[in-house]
Image 1 (tube, rainbow, N blue to C red):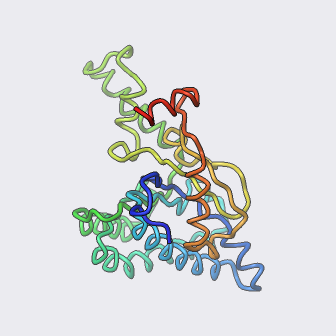
Image 2 (cartoon, rainbow, N blue to C red; image 1 turned 45 degrees about the vertical axis):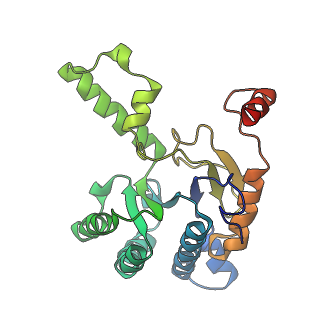
Length: 249
């Protein structure tokens, strides 16, 4: 098993699009809902694996702002699964030192779910072993738009000048502002796109795509992604020679 004790170049922040629940169910001749239930089990495995490896932040794309376009019955089942999973897992997360956060537009959720989300965040906020971020009713376009609105209000009220708006200011207002940007992005299920996920935050993230369907994603699959990450040279606009010089300094 990979651990931070073995080497110090693990990603601090891993972000995952959990794709393939429906196809997994189809392959197993099961209704789509059973694929989502199997996906919850994969979430448990990956949260535990990230914690064991010393990864600091794990962000999971649970429900996008575009997922409302799915059939109403499936959306309803997903919301029900969301509620039941949250009720069931929050005590385990608390006990294991996992801090739970949510990003996205909560206004579309019913009152019961909003209250559960608020309760889970407050209940686990002192935990420090792993920050688990759930992106629910989230979209990168929404994230950037709501950030621009915040800044526009400050300009309107006179506390900010337009020329003072900078990348650093935007980064300080956008979702996950207090956390490191993702080092490693993983998408399961064979698709190779970011699908409106963390568009601002993924600017220099290493991308990793796998054909493995999400319910089958396990610690070995996670380690394969981490090993791919470790082989890459992250230059952030510099040359390879500059990066090597900095390593040797």
